[in-house]
Image 1 (cartoon, rainbow, N blue to C red):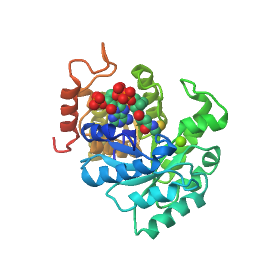
Image 2: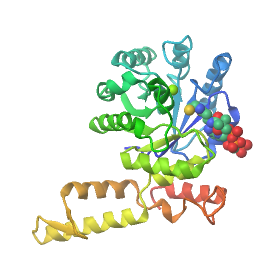
Image 3: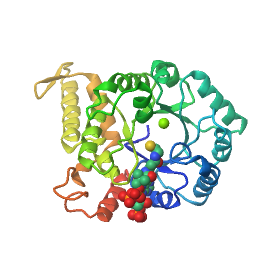
Length: 314
Ligand code: COA
Ligand code: MG
């Protein structure tokens, strides 16, 4: 399973941002041909994105292109441009029904492309149909499009998001039921990292794998929020030890720190340690005392450490 704590969008027309993303520590980059590109620039952006991918190596980061939806005059050309370039997935907006996915899959098949499909869950109909959408075999990830959703609902952006919690939770259920990744929507107030931190923690507590982002400053915060803390990893180790010694003594019942441990907790602990052998909190601390960047570490040194940390062997 892929770790996807942070997926940074950038406009497919913004060369500087796409270059900068080569050095950033997000787990995925999403080169956008849809909403972040104006109608007048669609053709230029499509060529720019194609060239950018062909001429650059984004390393361990997943590279995803968000195409325009197939009901627009640009959709098919977008798919044609990226169907056979080296990316990890194509992100398809405005998916509401199975036939929207089928249409995209048929087009990819026609280009001989086996690209996985990530779907934007951003319409009321998508929320209603999310089980059927999530179980489509070609779909590997769900991405919440909360801006569109809030707008379509005639709702408002509220900090605790209780007004869209049904939609979020329903989508998470569907993703989990069918073994798909699920990313939370963007936080538009990108200069306020404190509120962003709270929103990330909320997202993680609901079950999201990670967060879609719009600005590089959000990366460290999301990476930390969607990684386990040192205390969580230590507890996972203690839990596995307690389980093993109980097994060795032939006991089926294990108690750890006043709680009953069941085999599902052991599996969960093992999964956690497999994916996150070391906590990020050793390296960064959010919220910082002052300024935007973590205490002690300069941004570039922080980035260096994070890069090192991402190598599973250390
Ligand atoms: N991806 C990569 N780099 C980005 C970036 C992004 N999404 N957003 C900003 N940067 C870069 C800038 O180019 C700048 O680089 P530099 O330090 O080399 O000069 C640096 O980060 C700091 O940027 P800053 O000046 O703080 O912001 P900005 O005014 O350049 O950009 C936005 C602000 C909101 C316009 C920009 O962040 C953006 O376009 N975000 C993505 C929007 C998007 O894709 N929307 C669609 C999905 S909702
Ligand atoms: Mg949208």
